Length: 506
Image (cartoon, rainbow, N blue to C red; front, top):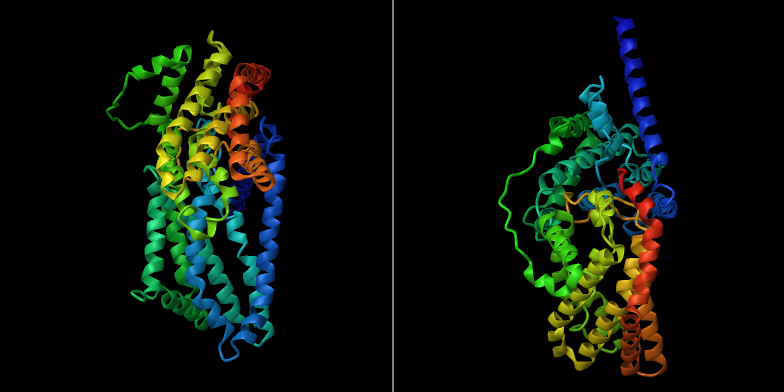
């Protein structure tokens, strides 16, 4: 019996080691990993910042609370805020944490049990940064409690309970994602749920603060109650296990929803000449797929962006910001859709490039679509004239700048895109396909026109600043053909690199 148990343990360890080895090779053999090194280094510094912040919080929290509230127990104060901590953790994980996945389909043709693969994926999620970050605050704070005479068993039980709840939130996040991923604007349910819980607690309808504080205090007083959050953790794990295992089949991706497609012939696009067929493909792609369709919903957010600033008296005397707002309002589609050109076509890019199609004609359709969106957004933003004629002037100058300069900038930047996009993934807060190019694009798209307008505004006047932006945009329009030739040449030079990169999984 002992020999069988040892053999079973060794088998599990070998499979785990094999899975880790496969993912390690996948990462370093991918064409895009070197392109992401700068972004990875930046993320490391961000992670270190949060680690140091939480560590400083854990060390300083006890003495600060003791000095500020000498008549209260610091541990009880911390427990009273745990509800807000857990609620914030759920929301942050929903937006930023994704279930770690593997390229499991090749494994399904091999003698590897599906249960082993699912267990590995779920176990890997336990090593998320979100799970270990709270420890940098919990452990120092618990050490301070021990140093001030608190019972060791109770303090350890308190720390373990917080960590178990954190792991439970980790698995709860994947269940929430599973239920919301099929809906448009999938972030709305979690925002509504989080807002409702906060409101119920804030207005003392249901005191979740007291409930959570009381539960954690009970575990502190009676360590045997640790079995309750532990059982909840097991239940959440089993639920995730059953859902993932049920979907782990070779033909699972072939099962599609049957629905009626309301197609349009898009006859009006014929006015754009040889770019019309590609514009029709782009418009159909946007309307029929989750991820690009988010560009349409975000148009409303961009159109209403000015309402955060123009009615506010604080910004009435800050006219230098109007051009920045105008760039964003009139260029919201250009920025959101354009930053992933040509990655939107990554699923069939190889086939597209094998056709006898002039590359310049392909890029012309993208330019035309973005330029038309700028014109439409400017027309829709005309009612902002209610807040002053200078706002309308700034929006006009920003629209011309977007058409003449930013369209060419974003097309040129697209030649550096190397990450594939799955069009059927959820739209909201999906960072698939996002790399260093997308992060750096904000500088020339948003901050460069702001710097130009702000500098001219400071030296001369608001009207001269608008004129400079408009003139720069007109220069871009005049030299459009030359700029497109340069951009096309760059795409042709990067053509085979993009084909290779888009053929791999991110």
